[in-house]
Amino acid sequence: MQQVLTCIIGGLGFAIGAACSYLRLRRQVRWAPAVLRVTVTLALVANVGHMASRFRDIGVAGTFQYSFDDAVLLATLLGLMGIGTHLAHALRGVDGFLFIMATVVQSAALAIVNQPEMHVTGRAWFVSHSIAFAISGTLFIAGGVAGVAYLLVNWMLRRKRPTTLVGNVASLESLERFGRWTPVIGFPFFTYGILTGLCGVWHRPDLKVGAWFLDPVLVSSLLVWAVFGYLCYGSLYKPQIRGKRAAVLSTYGLGLIVVAYLFRVFFSLLHI
Image 1: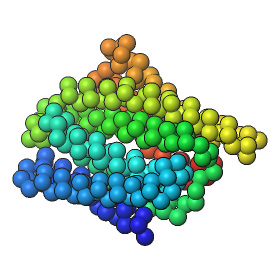
Image 2 (image 1 turned 90 degrees about the vertical axis):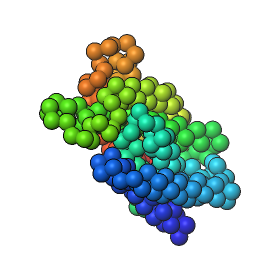
Image 3 (image 1 turned 180 degrees about the horizontal axis):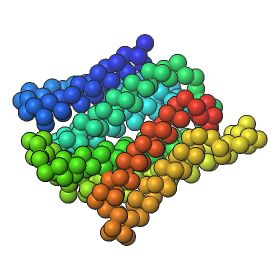
Image 4 (image 1 turned 120 degrees about the vertical axis):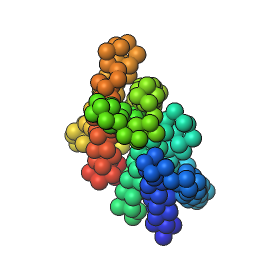
């Protein structure tokens, strides 16, 4: 019951936050920012309270044996990132996309409320695997939504009929800068998450006899790693892979992350 209540409070809080972000930018509704902060704060408090109770009851290592708690952690980090961009005037508009992604993750967690404990290694060091993926996932998603926002703003400007919305959202320069550095910061965490995941496979004798390397989560994660690795390399060393090209790559990466997450929740043999 606590898990369902956490999903409902968190999902509604983030969804209302996304709607208020739209009203603030599109309709210039004055009360929208205040409602956004209150509802998102309630969602974050519910999620943090849930995680704290799980840490108290079964410990940190035990908590991250469950896919539901991994999802709550990711939704919480996305909500925090959304609040951060909401308070940053230069990134106005990005918060709405992040709250939408937090809503999706929190709502999807309802499907795995009763999912049993994963048969992964219970060693304390393996906690860092879940945390690294949550951090990198948040940063990659943030970079991806910045790419989507960049393409939308660029499209509106190219129409040569800019709406009032263009003047209320982040500039292309701010979106490009944010979308460039978030993947660069998240890439080492994602690499670490993959490496610790492979170490976890090594500690599971039941997986050594099967074709675990064909697991859809591993395959899709390697594709995400390749896309964002190329994006990071281009951002640092190839000036031509910036602006619209970088935004397109980030958008593709965001799509791959969504696919990898769905595989992780519903189809992965490595996480059962």
